[in-house]
Length: 421
Ligand code: GDP
Image (cartoon, rainbow, N blue to C red; front, side, top):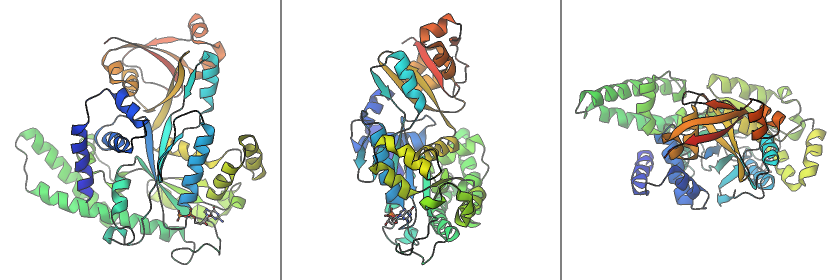
């Protein structure tokens, strides 16, 4: 089943017309869910490029607050970005804007007609219960959904409420985390076992393919060993080549995981006083994962309030911002992502790239032609742009730099690409 999910994408990719990246990304916003799936999966499993929309899957045992968090995040996203084509594509998939206060500042300075934030796609993945890998609950259906995401957000119940049944009878973050980990590990073990058997037959015809085959076998054997010890695949140190050759398997425990400790509103201001949260924190570091504290309930209540009353409500709980910002920042940091901007009269826009990308690679996220024909990038740091007041003023003050092909883009750079096609 797992392999079928991946190979059908290869077929679907072959059927995709070879349009430019920009055209395909436009499909992303057309509301055509089929293409959304193909586009994102293609990027996730087969290329290191960043798609315009990051995809984060929300998993967790029943009654931990997944749907409450998902609905709140989508509603909040809609309210923050009422003018943008962000939407709920399917009942369990929503694209929301990445909150970034710098965007409005740039847009105002540039007198832009349009402001386009970066986006993040949340998927509420139901059906992950004990025994799911053996067909319990929705069985293996959740698998194909998890395979498509860039990161997994596991909601862990850290709030007590006698009216809300806990699936195992009591609030117990360690047990919840273990249950889900085991299901993901079982799925990966099953897939790796089958793949190793095939690799043992050694089908490679030339020396280069043989090297790759050997690298894959060696990596998978080490990953198998780790999984059998209850450790995720991401805990295994792999070389670049090994990483490349195992990518096609889209292993579930290779994906970055963020534990979302869902606490009562009274715990938001001082989450460290909640012993469950401390437990989640410890486990997340043992499992090479991130963690973030939210109150799904609060997020849900926030969506009912007018925008101007939200900060006041948050302040009354002893916090300064909603959990969504934290969640997105944690995802960005765990995935090693950062933002750069383009800003002009027509539009101001945020783009998501991997940290360490060069200027041509960053340009390629907008359009593959920008990367191919890259000449140079006129670049100014966000703070310098704001101080100068405009691109023209930044140029006059010598704050606008002309950067070449080797330039590593920095967080918050405002860029104008010169290219040749
Ligand atoms: P799911 O099965 O994981 O999707 O869980 P739901 O989002 O449907 O939540 C299950 C129940 O827990 C609902 O009645 C929610 O209102 C409630 N719930 C979710 N988050 C919180 C929270 O932070 N505090 C409290 N007290 N209840 C919550």
